[in-house]
Image (cartoon, rainbow, N blue to C red):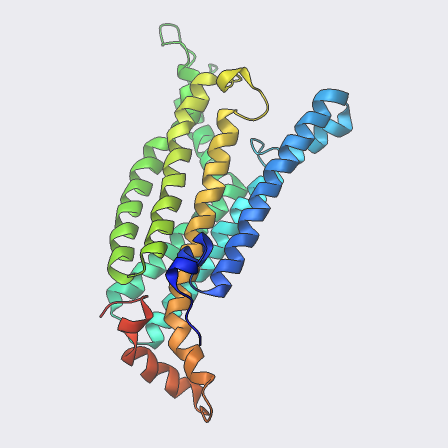
Length: 288
């Protein structure tokens, strides 16, 4: 196969050496941009006409709305990440990787599967309601007692951060160290770190959302709402992590794809195992 000089490659070509990962990335980014366009369009239409129909459309396409297209897209990406982790886990098992690496991918599978469930079933919102119900005195309201600082009732809606932030921070550190040891390609590492940054921005803006309420940055109610920014940071972060894992998987299976394309390669399963073990260093995906 003819190699393209790095100086002649586009940014997508550098970050995504594999055509499959490059095409998936472009598709996901375009879908994300389409979400923004639909959100803005539905908001403008509702602002102009302000009817029941336009309100339904605004809620359906709103990035800040629960149960919207954006929520579905985010949950779908998280489920795809979990699926990729499962595929990589199976591949690592077949190629005889150590139990530590296999368990690592299994743990990431369960994590992203839970995050996908959380996005769809609103687990953390329900957790907040449970905590409030447990704190509510008989015949009273939770955190609504005299003498508490103003806004404490709003902060109660974000108690899940006390659990999510430490857990996700620890997972991010483990994932970064795990990935840095297994992946040699700098573009793939950059994608993973940038994707994790999207999660950090999302969680970091949750308290800001609680304090600002309905206010917006620079007085612009359409484009710069805190909720919208954090939602798109999450979606973009998921896209980058998903495509980073695609890069990793493509590097893993590259020797197998090359071997089955060679003339006379009749025993693909045997060739896959021997070729992968012989070419781990050359793939850029794994280190011995």
